[in-house]
Amino acid sequence: MQNPISITSMASISSLGSHPETIWKNYCNPNHNFVLKDFGNSKEYIAPLSDFENVEIEKLRESNNKYKNLDKSVLMALFASRKAVENTNWKDGDFGINIGSSRGATSLFEKHYKEFLERNKTNPLASPTTTLGNISSWIAHDLQSQGPTISHSITCSTALHALINGIAWINSGMCDKFLVGGTEAPLTDFTIAQMKAMKIYASNEETSYPCRTLDFAKKKNTMILGEGASIMCLQKGKKENAIATIEGIGYATEILEHNTSISDDALCFQKSMSMALKNTSLSDVNTIVMHAPGTIKGDSSEYKAIQTIFGDSIPALTSNKWKIGHTFGASGALSLEFAILMLQHQKFIDIPFLENQKHPKQLKKILVNAVGFGGNAVSVLLSL
Image (cartoon, rainbow, N blue to C red; front, side, top):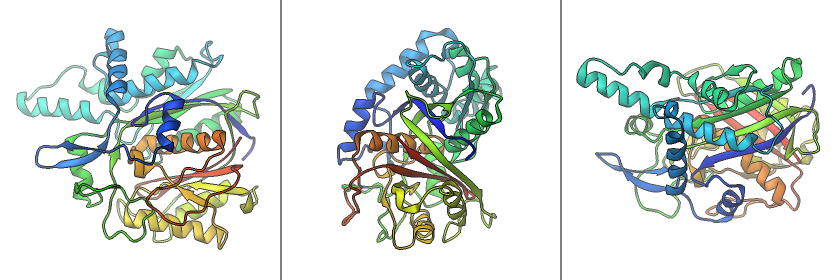
């Protein structure tokens, strides 16, 4: 990477909460955050915001008449963005914004489309409030940013693609500071139905841990959806106020064999991890926060890629999806936050239903992975 990049602030909202102390406390708790919700024909596991966080989002919606018609994905991104910049000196608006989402305004789009089917006409705000670009645009409006404003969707690696895009802008000299991240509110009937149609969603059987991330003995897919947003502030160089330093980034895309395909040994992850670790000794990496969505092939292929890169010296492995589910476009940023919290507290958070997990004595460098449909992989190397 051309220059180290500092993460000077970060904020999120998810089933873990929205305050750093609460989020860390929930990570240290061995229980998952899933609840069973009735989706008409069946009950399915999801990881929603808590009642308290939902109230906070509704307060934000009601705080400005312009926000009343926005999708929850946009409101969560607004909420997290405000918290991310509140302790910075980013008040002059000279920063860029790149906040992405895999599916965008899912709930609002479904609502408007249902109305169209029923009435054969739609609300005038249907288009501007469901376009993907309205996420970063409303954040720029809310924070009065004068820099470049970008939204994108690169499926489940969206947030980490936003991060590497922000780094590219900073290293080009075109912008000094960038606000990056992802947001997702996918807990809708149609989205759940899509995941079930692909046969990757967890069953609704009551069990201690319904999402079996990194359980290589599982006989069926166990992915569960969650909602949330995670936003971080990037600046060039090593800053005294940094909460973490980005030492390496890597990215790769596989040749598509199927719309959702990834190769058996995740060639995309092999390439992205190799790129991120180019200037780092493999022995310095203490932990990998894996993408590991709880699917049979997704988990095993990423693990095989790690075996290829690290050989017999595989670092400690973990993931947060057994606890908060898969938040699609926000998942990579939430994984980064997970890694930063472990670095700050010098505590490795394991997966409670797995036995004989490696526990590093000290956490110095953590590698974070994310990948989307079609093998769009990103790897990010973090240190304090």
